[in-house]
Length: 282
Image (cartoon, rainbow, N blue to C red; front, side, top):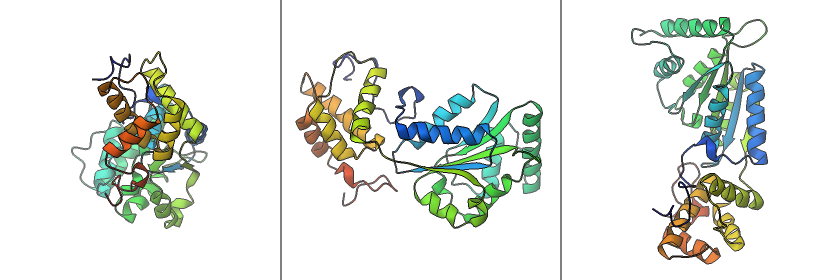
């Protein structure tokens, strides 16, 4: 709708995990480097946590894209709220296995074992990524994931497990000492700083084809104040600001536009419950 007005090729602030739009802040670079270390060194497991909307899912897509260029077979589980057997089936399916005739747990484990050793014989490493892992409902499922790490040789693991989730994921893992001991790397993805927020916005605009400056300096400060550096919140504010600017035929977006946009959204962005994505007192 507003793309032509702002001379953009596409919308820059869609809340979709498109790797083209990733802004490599210091925190993102650190998170990716640690996860890649675990994967490439064939370590057991890594945990990446962060607030709701901090960019964990986008990082998982970037990781998948990079792994596809190398000798890896990744499986991405984006809905882990499954019974244990169903989760095993989904992992095997994502790895290219056929589970249609498999009913019992032992048969599923045999099928997974065959996939892992086949990948090993073809010099391919298996990586299992579980997004929104804090949503796993039962401790039994975490225990099953831990047991998957028993698929190993004398000198390395046959699979690497990457768990991504909101901060409560770390608490759940800490309550399972056997799993905690298997975690090789744990990293918390912090929010962007004011300067990074500004660069994040400019980067996404550039990827979308922007040729001109659209946001004034005071707008960046106001965006950070309301978003607290959380990418999803930044995207929501900027999307509405571009739409408002288009509707009002503005030449640039200033801090007053941002203030009005936040009011019009009828929410205090800084008051979002990061666990549910819902507003507090809203």
